[in-house]
Length: 246
Image 1 (cartoon, rainbow, N blue to C red):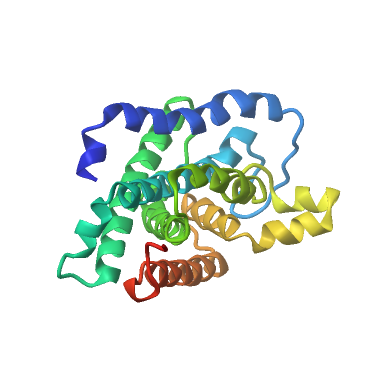
Image 2 (image 1 turned 120 degrees about the vertical axis):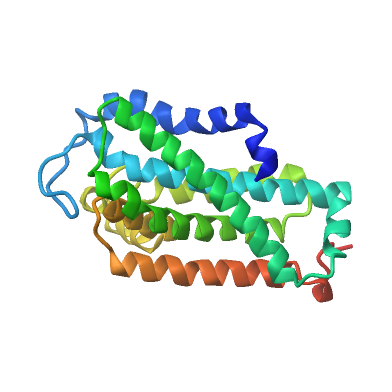
């Protein structure tokens, strides 16, 4: 976390991707994608407003993956061995790493929401505060996913495959860019896949929270998924099974 706060360029770079989607892609998709009145919205909204929660999820997703990438690098450089010799429980080390990464994601999300508000894409005032626990829970889940993946990746070069086969499918096969009912119009199978995607539940949790509402099913799904991912990460970094496979 302290390392990130000293790297202002990294903070700004993390905002470029969601801002491009918000200000460029949304302008082109606005005419092509019609939106109906669905909860938590009580009236018709612009496409830019719809994708803001999904772009917050994108920030948390990519931040969690980037944070886990540093673990793969540390393992290759050998500094991970020194860290793991500390007289602290393994779960505590991983959870501390997870908390630091999540806090960074929260800073990025609120910076993004501030910029979106400056462009006229704002949410109810109380929603910004209500979204904090939702963003925190979603960030922990997505960060735990990154930790779980990093425990099975041996080399830094293999992390590029994760981007193509895990991150991008999770993002595009979700409700981040288009509502699920829109997906059902083209393919029921794709709709079912999107509905089962943990990232979809994270996005919907954030979406409802920004309007000071709670999506209980999404909250329970994100919480349970976070426990599963974190358990896999702790098991993956268990020295008894050989964290560094030979």
